[in-house]
Amino acid sequence: MNLEIRNVKIATATGISPVTDYVLKYITGNIKISDGKIISISNESSESENVFEGDGMLAIPGFVDPHTHIPFVGDRAKEFLMRAKGAKYSEILKAGGGIHSTVDSVRKASFDDLVTHGLKYARWFLKSGVTAIECKSGYGLDFENEIKQLEAIKRISENIPQKVVSTFLGAHAVPSAGEKAYLTELKHMLDVVKEKDLAKFVDIFCDEGAFSVEGSVKYMNYAKSKGFKIRVHADELSSNGFAGIASDLGATSVDHLAMCSKAEIKKMAQNKTMAVLLPLTSFYLKNAFAPARAMIDEGVPVALGSDFNPGSNTFYSPFLNIHVAVNHLNMTPKEAFVAHTLNAACVIGLEEEIGTVEIGKRADILILDAPDIEYIPYMPTNELVRAVFINGVEVFENRDSFPRQN
Ligand SMILES: [Zn+2]
Image (tube, rainbow, N blue to C red; front, side, top):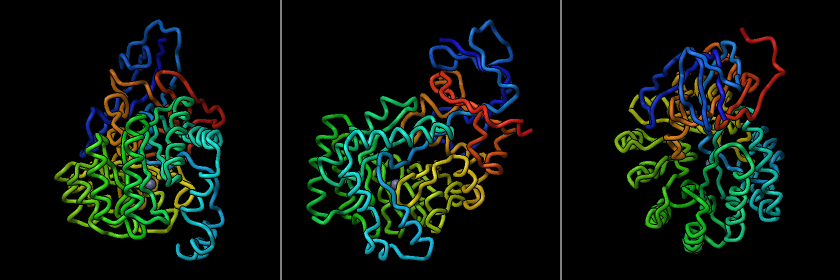
């Protein structure tokens, strides 16, 4: 099928590798699409049957979210209110909240329930312009329920227009059996995950109250030996040096990093390890923000993700994420934009297909009612999204928001 998106102002990063200079290219013209791919960008218009009139609006690559905790069920609204009133995590745990309450809900949930909730959330993401997402397990913490989550991700991906990349996060929390016994169990799970081809990445939460550095290193090495790419949750609550160690181990990305040290930033820059920052979680928990400025100035390729999950952050809008990145992390609008498009695509290994609006890439394009990129952090509403194209097919159109912003 052919499509022409006519008369748009394109703003995009370029290329197929993580960017550290955050330079954007601007072109005004028409985007021609054939078989889901961009085949030309020019001022010439052709006799196309399918035309989307852009009317001078902004055309950008679809947002990529490289870090979510879909699928899950249940809510932790009580816990949110306790925290809002100043409760500590230990008090929340005592009251039956925390990650283990989600684990209980997910274990009790049927496969179909998990899928249905995942589909709903994916739809929310779509309406806010997210055209590719990473999803992970991590609320099962045993063989049956971790595999159930990964199978649910597979089913979800088959039923939504977005591209989905799957991560095995069996090592999300230490169950009552203890770290040593559980890590042994996790290795058996990894074998099955590999056999069934259920995940591209293996992830671990190495922090205070989660897995130890020693156990994490052994487990990551095992995952690598099985042919998995690795990613890690590190330096969220405390700095234990694991972000630097994971970088040396060849991790594709190191995520969270609110407490990241200067030495670790240097290491990540040297190794070109991608930093996935999740400022919506810091915002939600009223915690410290990651030192984005120091990372970017040192040459670490930075990506942005939502960390959407039922406990520590229920925000998912890339618009709000970019607002927080600019307002609280001192990133520039261009840096935040590239971090949520091309660099995020690089994290999940889709850089050759998506992340930019360029000839040869998949036509995952958003039409925004915004004059330029700088407008996004200023007016961070999903209502700016006027149309979402995935693979050159219009999968969402918002006709509610008139007149135009300017
Ligand atoms: Zn996470």
